[in-house]
Amino acid sequence: MSLTLLPFRPSSDAEYRTAMIRRYLGANFTVQVHLLAEAVDYDKANPGAPSLVDELRGASLGDAA
Image (cartoon, rainbow, N blue to C red; front, side, top):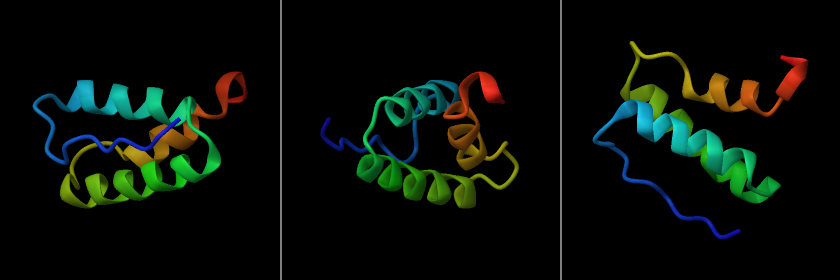
């Protein structure tokens, strides 16, 4: 899987977040690290929104969450 960054300011936050989670779950470790870095930037730019980093980490737990 290759790394393809999404636009930083998505037209729809819900679509952006869903796309990030799907990409994160299907990615290898190296790509996941890059996606987490992108999620950190997103969280900093959107302080009132739920943490995307937490969503990515939680989604990777599967049924254990």
